[in-house]
Length: 104
Image 1 (cartoon, rainbow, N blue to C red):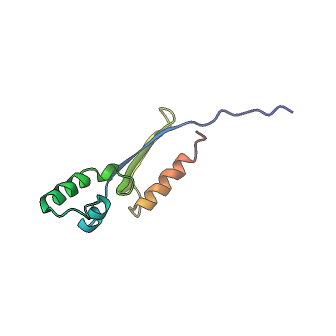
Image 2 (cartoon, one colour; image 1 turned 90 degrees about the vertical axis):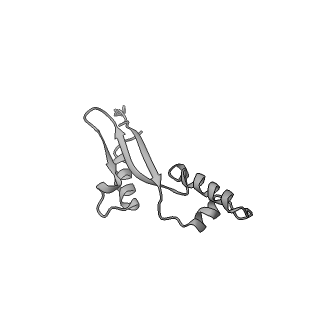
Image 3 (tube, rainbow, N blue to C red; image 1 turned 45 degrees about the vertical axis):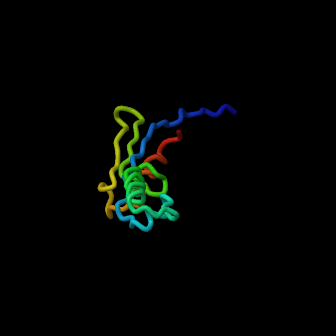
């Protein structure tokens, strides 16, 4: 018996992140390992450098928008503010639900 194999639904996707802004200096110090440092200026400099990279760090980044492209008619994006209530969890659930429509 021959089974007809349907073409897989394929989409490209991308997700963008931003820095979490609610992190205390103590948390930042712990993450960027300033524990043994004693020079206040060096600590402040290291903390500032670390804060400038928060949006790209896996532990400190927060997804803010995600897009997909399957065809000119089937493409779009969701932003964090497009979800009600506006939360990271709600955004991710909506985005992953959309991506689940595709095989690849």
